[in-house]
Length: 229
Ligand code: SIN
Ligand code: MN
Image 1 (cartoon, rainbow, N blue to C red):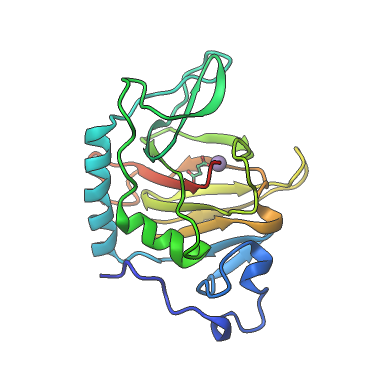
Image 2: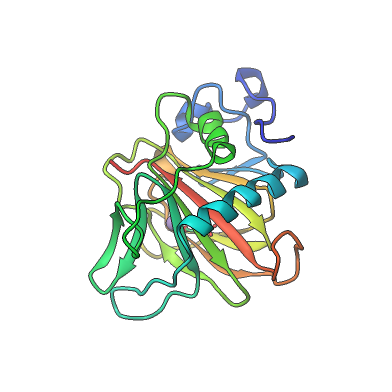
């Protein structure tokens, strides 16, 4: 059903970097493109696979309802979020951190197998991610440039899966500031920040409302998979 990785292996990488140079498994499938060490696989998930994953995510959201976190400065974030896995990512006036429980006090639901399949194809079989952050972007939501740096071990990549509306993903540098590059992420795309790109600044400038009819009510879901501790 398209949940499997595109054909990968040594040959598929051809003249490109070796997958291990990007912090990925030696037999990771060849990406469509790499920019600043960030790997992008366009159209990893077929439409039926996207629908199946969305059904799995509805179960996650039923068990752990979406909420609108606050930044440490007390500003409400424009995305709604929840998590699956051993840890959930959380933010309030005390700052950014991982939490063992949803704000209502229950453990986070397990990460759906449809999502884990992608992780293992890209990051290898040795470890599963601890956290699958689910971000919902309704019209007007965005995410400022930031690094993913609340984890203990940066040798594991960060993986992201896009579902629904197109989103303009901005890639910066390891340090703050400097020139950036942007690319459009579309429904079914998978992206990895690993190896030298593990701590690259990134964010979502805007989405393109109405560009996909995958989500009821419109919008975009991004999944971020990370090893936490
Ligand atoms: C994030 O970095 O937290 C989200 C990235 C995305 O929505 O694609
Ligand atoms: Mn991030």
